[in-house]
Image (cartoon, rainbow, N blue to C red; front, side, top):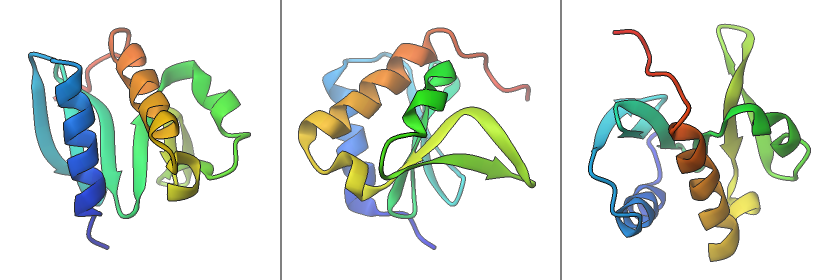
Amino acid sequence: MAYNEKLADKIREALADHDLPDIEEKKMFRGICFMVNGKMCVCASGDEMLCRIGPEYKDALEKHGVRGMIRNGKALKDFIFVSEDAMKTKKEFDSWITKALAFNKFAKATKK
């Protein structure tokens, strides 16, 4: 499935609003990921947004429209998929971006 271009543009605009010096786009997770300071932060994957929000992911999983990330049959900590239902308003959308950017400061870069 191709990623939602409108969602990707919305993410680009939100990240630009934060005036971050080091943002890179990479194709991964069936979509386009936005790397901040060399670390995966947020992605447009299909019609969902994949957010790396750290330990807060456990609480986020209890919200409607949020699901965990499963990779090779294993649940990954720190990552969640956010559906359109969980980001209908600008406030909701911005809160996910803010959570991902907040955790990015503490996240470890993936080994190359």
